[in-house]
Length: 167
View 1 (cartoon, rainbow, N blue to C red):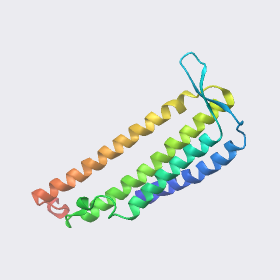
View 2 (cartoon, one colour):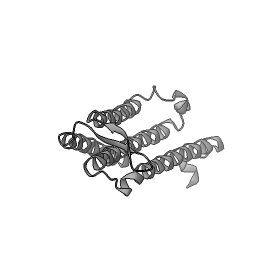
View 3 (spheres, helix red, strand yellow):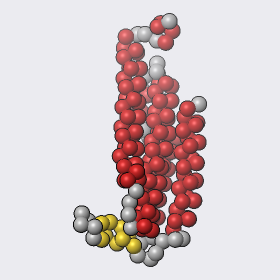
View 4 (cartoon, rainbow, N blue to C red):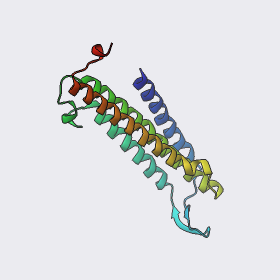
């Protein structure tokens, strides 16, 4: 249930990012300052192609994670080698990939928004500057919880306890 909710939110973010790209792309000048040095001088110029590259990178990551989630033989057959808890591990891995898709879209949307604000207003929004770090922290926490869950499942298997034994 949680995985379907996360997948739905990720898909809505995917659609939102497409709409965002189309609406921003039409308003971009042919050349704009992309990066500023410590003194506030322009250090790099960009073109609208930069937005397409950022969007394309996000779509590649989203598509790659979707493929990995669909074909479990691609990622870690060793993870599912034991038949005892393989289904639980598989579901946990699918949930991990769903969250990673959601987080990757959040990163690329924040990058696109930050680039757009810098182009249109020659300034940045502090929240958008920190959004990447917040999302990266969420990714690290999600991966840590995933590995903790897998480790916990492996310990239960080694000790011979199952869900029915704990009751």
